[in-house]
Length: 202
Image (cartoon, helix red, strand yellow):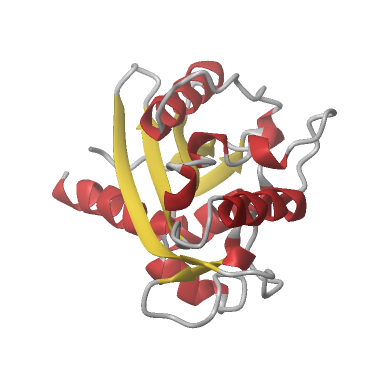
């Protein structure tokens, strides 16, 4: 896989765009967000993280004529049979499409407690990165980070479900640690390591 000089980051999520830019910074790749190019958000009709990441990357590449990188990620909770999973962002949406992850975290906590004391608090984050080229070529890379859920949420760094997730072997949530540290150990960092390895092999 040839490393592109410029990439469209196919997301309208400011936190995710900021994190992806930071992870790509060492490569010297110029990054532009989908919102900056007025690209629409596609309907995420896939049934897996890979489906949705590839769908978003393909659309951004087709509309921009540039290589596009899309991320589909979410929180999978064992007690909830893998939910919210690919619907992680939708659990945060209200009727107007605005996202409130405080409300989403409350829902996760409430449903985990309703599952009973034996359900446990194990969870993992999943991230799939899909790189699409204008010629239709797409390649995907998956990362995972195992941990447990805490309540109430802790920390004001990060975004999404970070304030309620503690990586296995750690005591602080993803929202309590320095974000440079998170960039080294997260599910997204794991997926990026695989993407960078593909660049190196090419």
